[in-house]
Image 1: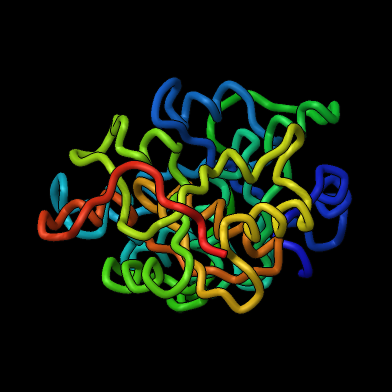
Image 2: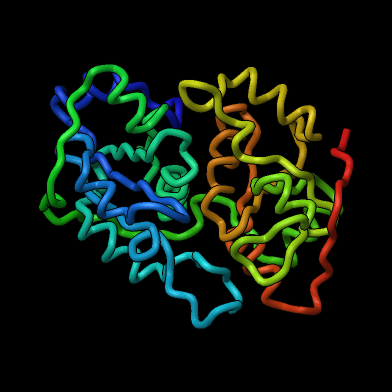
Length: 285
């Protein structure tokens, strides 16, 4: 599987083939309708409903605890989740969200991390599917045959707070949150505003065009301007490790492998001894 993205037409063709992919609906947002309400209102026919909080993250021990608001799930728990969702070792998986991959990339990254390599994100998500005139179905979540994926951790590079700080010093640590949150001008979710010292502001919205993620050459140019080149030690973080997975996906599309600081800002500020920076910082060269 050469690309982590699949187009609407390619997905339609694959679903008509002899080994159709399992399709996972992973839409989620900080506000507005719940994921289940979004799914019930309309989804790709046959898509399996996935809840970010329940299925793609562990449960935080308490507010402000290490690991952040969306900690990585325990591998044993994750294996049961993937099997319940119908994920099989020998069947490709396509994940989608509303359109910009800021949530779908979490499922892509986590499945890759857990040892399933035939995973793609639907480019443009549900919006692209509907815009192409493809059918959207309303209704309750579908039942699927139980999967058999065996979780093996370590398929993707993941950092803790100490390693993220080191990348900020010696490589490029990209902050995928909005510029206002990076600069510390506002913080709607976490108890402390600002960013990891040395991190570079790289809002995830900048990876997306009108029809989905930017083309690889456009992404390479964007990341080069942010200091990421071939051979650069790069990593990404956001508020809780969800949106930053989209930046890791965009970097992979650009041919620039990167790690994910999974706990992200919500983990960083769980220790009051960790330094916090505000304002702008210049991108690397």
